Length: 313
Image 1 (cartoon, rainbow, N blue to C red):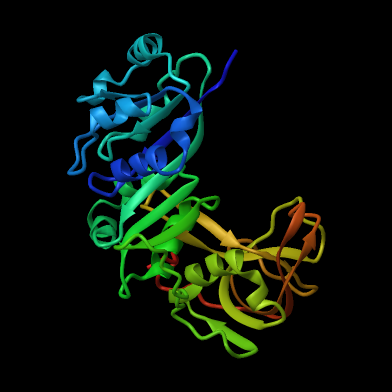
Image 2 (cartoon, rainbow, N blue to C red):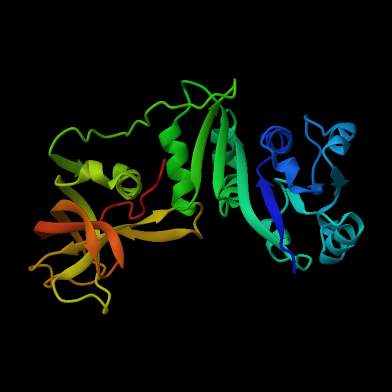
């Protein structure tokens, strides 16, 4: 049976979803793939021109209410329009479970998910509606921050997205549509050969290590960590790390790297230690691929911090 690709567009209202779909169809050659069906789940400032859509063999179906987005509805429009490809502009205030738990028509398959974010309002949404906006970005293959300017904190935005969605590719666009290619700034200095990572910087540093491990290679790093020693690790290896709040109180995850140390076994699981170690990026059997690993020079007992969680802000 022929597979029908679905391109999913998520994000809050007026974040640029409609504009992106129109550009995709009209400028990027997607209209040449056959009959297109656009399922639009909200009315924004930018509207579709149905006469324009007709010229490229595209049809538009509006969905006003979340309860109307059902398997029966999708099957009905599939039979009516017989599309070769589907573009879903999802409502930013609807729960993502409505989409993920709805059975799709036979042959329909999500092949790419794109999320758009208005950089001028992202901080406000993070402060007041964090769980809702992050849900829109959680499964996106590509997250596009548009309307960026010189004050846009690209590093902060990347860390917030990557904390929940490691696979996402991030794109930053300025108001004129050009790419924002400024370097992302870190809140700590990595120019020296030795780094002392504070609790305030731990989560940010951890994510940057995953994204840009080569720039830390060979550096000596000191940080406060919680001992984690899973049974499957061989003798002489443990995982020092911290618990980080990635979205809300219900989304806390442990963030640590493998560490080789001969003298760590005297410390108990969940005990705090200060680790001083050399950072390397190499193949490790425990990862099954290349990954960050520490070679400890010193592991010392430490007091529990007042705030045990670390954050990405």
